[in-house]
Length: 202
Image 1: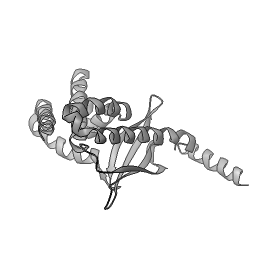
Image 2: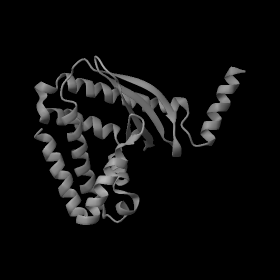
Image 3: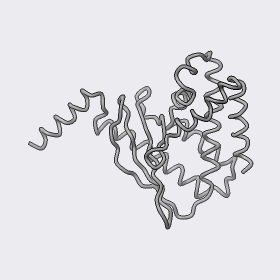
Image 4: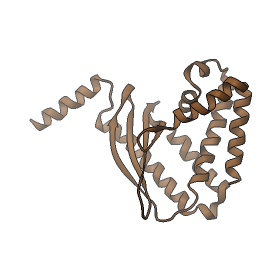
């Protein structure tokens, strides 16, 4: 009876377009590996310096994040559709560099922090949300949930939710859309590049 119930639930999830548990395990594995890389960078962060942290984090971020999808979602579908392929490529590279620099400026040292995995739950449009926490040696842990979807057969992050509610994409869209509206694409690219450079000086 229990096996029949599990089979029915998996079939029901498939009919809704939601990932089955075995499929979603790939999403969990991707975040575990990413968290391991973050922890490694934190433990060697002082020795590596900002440039060294960037070099170690960039391939990990490119591997686990759908940077094209995140850039387009941050820009907004309508605005992204107006870009030429060359403009889109330049913006994706600028946003990737900014994202890597953000991580490199935040995960600088290790003070006994650990990462814990939470549950993985289905979301809309075939996506899943992979729960995780960063846990300090003392004090409250911080929830970092990853919204993921399959891109060319591989689970990729398309948004990050801080404390379960604050969407990274939504925050950046609010910031970038006004710059794009007032200063155009060149102004937005310049603003992103300046923010990236400023992170390296912190």
